Image 1 (cartoon, rainbow, N blue to C red):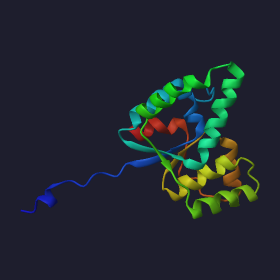
Image 2 (image 1 turned 90 degrees about the vertical axis):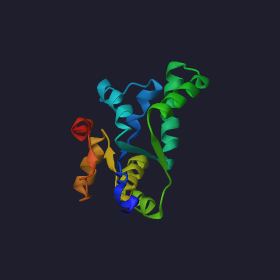
Image 3 (image 1 turned 90 degrees about the horizontal axis):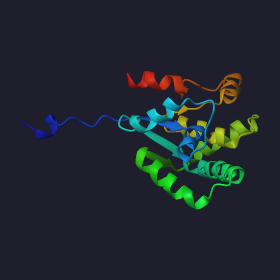
Image 4 (image 1 turned 180 degrees about the vertical axis):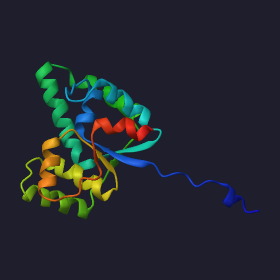
Length: 164
């Protein structure tokens, strides 16, 4: 008997691209539209899902965290612990851009969506065959109005359904 046939092939995990709004709470930045239970779910979901985040969006994350530090007076040096904790709790893969992702992101921007980071997130999720977790309903409306595929976009209310 061939031992290779007895081994189960590892199940490929579903990818979920986290919009920046879902990462900010791990740095002490409250996002009022996202219930606390959702943020608690994300680390537990790492066992069953692969979370991804576009490399090109790291600047957005840094900008939003920095803005909050300015607003609250929080010491930037204290963020090292937050980064370490986040990376230990959430298994997240940073995704390099591909030419296809860049072209689609620019196409969305040229068609009129002003937030290039939304455009990058959408195009990355599309070409990575990932679900795109967002709370940006205006962006979803823009995509619908321009006949883009939104079948892979999910809201936080869909997260519990994914666990069942």
